Image 1 (cartoon, rainbow, N blue to C red):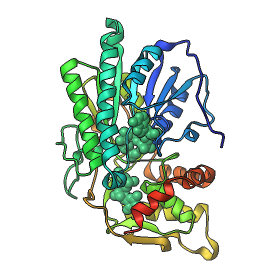
Image 2: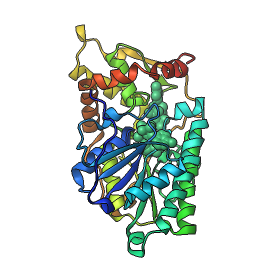
Image 3: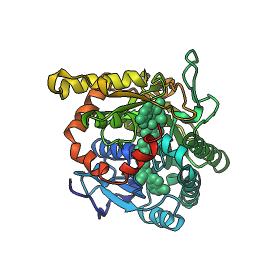
Image 4: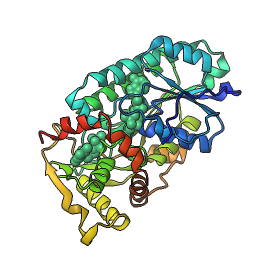
Length: 368
Ligand code: NAD
Ligand code: TYD
């Protein structure tokens, strides 16, 4: 795959440009891809390129409409200079450390980026926004992309999370995202900065780093390796296809109410073992093994994640009613697309697997 380096577009419609942070990661890259198809405005993508950032994810896109800047959302002089040069009419903040297991093994980076980095970005944006003229200030938006994990864990018989549910984060990752959400709320309340926060359930789809459940299972199955299911595998997640999440964020940018939060989810609750079985079944159709061996034979129950949240579920009725958003993909169709994508793009995964990913697999799975 060709490495995309610095894009050097000069955007003639600067005022309409949006700034995306973390656009070389899983959701950010899908967002940029779908944005360029759906909208006219150009994108500037600020990404630090941590282990999870990958410019292969943006391969093949129209370079006249995206500019890539490598940098940290917490680098105040870089962010200020970028805002002054690009003058974006909106910012969508995806940049974060995003993996719960990594946050358990080493929370530092989560506090540095998700809390301190987000705070610094927010302050730069506040200063930029306050210098705008009144009409620009009116239409400017800052969308902060967050997670349902801020709400903690649900019991089997509890109603799904609403925007009014209490924050009860349980992992270092969830606590760091909850902190950033609180900053968003306060900066809107105190300074009237037009911020909208989205809290989305588990995403899956193309370009997801293979440390997360679905791509990890597909990859291990294809490689003939064990499929490590934590604990009893009966934890529940509410899965949403990534392009449906991206469409929801576009709807929020277009018509979301400043100061609001929106829950986004697929209303598609599955236990982890159901997800793994579904992956195995699709692989059996798409990539049958010799002698009709079942991929399910590779499933291995391993020691549970500490503090593992039992169930997440999202009530997405607010965004459905206010913004008329609804997911297009069912879990079945989205999962099939995803499996097919990973089967067809093994070179993408191979490049990741050859790097520091191997050290992570050793750290997370050797003692289980
Ligand atoms: P990801 O880990 O795949 O990508 C994160 C991106 O942010 C990477 O490109 C990385 O290089 C970049 N980044 C990290 N620290 C940075 C910094 N200090 N400055 C600039 N860039 C930095 O994550 P993802 O799964 O795409 O998630 C994106 C956002 O969506 C996160 O904020 C996450 O909390 C949220 N979210 C994710 C899910 C999910 O299921 N993946 C669900 C709901 C919400
Ligand atoms: P993950 O993709 O890490 O997302 P999150 O923890 O943010 O929900 O994990 C999804 C679920 O899958 C979660 O309950 C943990 C479980 N899981 C496994 O059982 N085995 C694995 O190897 C991984 C990575 C996750």
